[in-house]
Image (cartoon, rainbow, N blue to C red):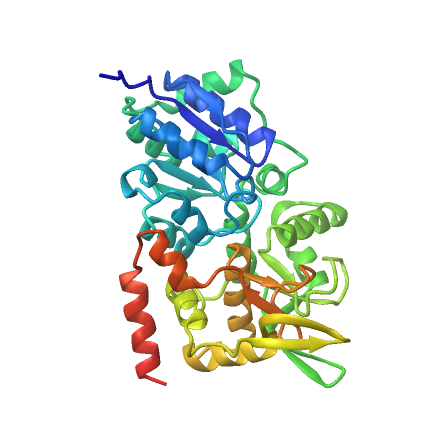
Length: 373
């Protein structure tokens, strides 16, 4: 009879700062950490390790694991056993993260999805990621002061080169909280340029004014925060062409109450079904792109189905792109409301079947949407 190996916390993270912070958390919990080296076979190795070590846990950043699984659904498919999948914690440090996306990860059977891995966030009382790791590893609750001591002893600090960490240091807020505050205090209105109206946006100068006044920042430092929000896809130029600047260019945050109502898994099921978007071979400048759809058509189709404004439908489609479910045919653009070609990375029904997952709430929602249109 084989004796199970002792438990390990496997770490596959996108940044050295996050790896250092999570290693300190593991050491404080008396749970030995080990690195899971990213690569095409990383998930097969992890699945085998979770079988051999029944009480082990994994913390995986979706950007780090992309060579093995480019989307959230593909990641679920690569870990087909739901009991083992429930011991995998996901992180998304390099992009924005909203509650509906966290809820979708839970529906897929993962232990959770978090974005903030800095020592300030992790040392907060009742920090959900730390509590989740302790529960999965069977470790006792970890007092924040004990974790702070490990961060100090292991010299874990904020990484000033990382957008999330710069935002935390300058404002004391998470990136998402800063985006919410900006959306609440900087008035977004419809604006016109060259006879075209851009809905619900504000100028770069207005954002810089607010950041400077609210957080006592000089204008170059405020611009740096705007660029950091843009890097995390929490703030975007209205036509995705200009970096954030202290200029009258138009920008908008990538959150909206109308968008945040929708289950992201249900939206993907809706747009990728055979009766969804118009997917076919298309030609541009002599090159044929197989089985793709047009960005402008997708935006308008989804806006009609979900009763959204065009820019809200574009935000929602870009959330699917950020989760690896949609891609531009040459990888050059986010989803844009124009004559740009995109494709689904993997047919959704096949991936859902391989993952052993049927998003019942999402599919019911998609069914209701079809009935109402």
